[in-house]
Image (tube, rainbow, N blue to C red; front, side, top):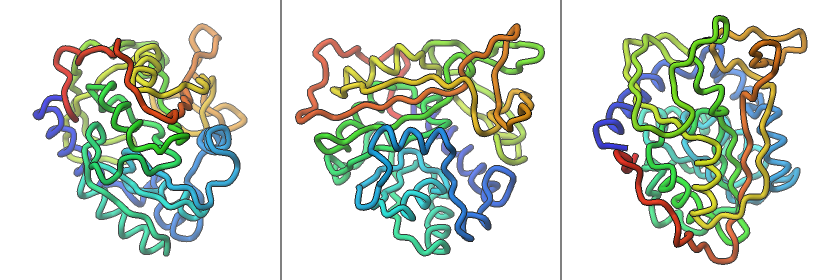
Length: 287
């Protein structure tokens, strides 16, 4: 991402982090009282990636924002490090961890160029829902995450499906975003996905499933599985009402399309980026 785009997004996430924390999306009081923040999709991804127990595992929560999931993982016995580029979010995350009486390390850093002290030490890199649309250089993101893993360590990535990301609304169906990377797209809004705020601007980037899987492979990761989810446990926006079972579904002409995907990939004994790894896309840089 260009420096201007990174600065724009950081300013916005600082504003959003100020507003987030006690709302319909981020219920801090419930978290402090012992509520678990992981959805069933994330729990299933964890089980598939590392098994039912994370006790004792070193976990890197990538783009952790307020640290809700980092705290929930720490409560399961994981040794968690959360990383994010927003100092405002990290201050709130540290306070929440203190109030929840769990030990989580929070690091302010560029996720496409993680600090060297985080290299090679993690059993799991955990990144979920609302992750890659902020990243211009997905190859750099995958390389950085891959190098944070120890041999045998795994990446669990759960994110919005590129088909769903294309939509502005479902009824009527309106598309306002590409399926695959074609450079930066700027949006202005008077609120985040969780709360009303002052007017903010974001710069976002599209990535197709093919680009995401290829980036993992060229970073030296071995792709274990890729699942596409035709329902979601939480409201992802676009005006979709929940069905009677409480699940959200993306229907077009009566057919369900994917809302989310789960990617699990493993660092082999030696991470060797592919000699055929693509060069940076035009306009892509560090976030």
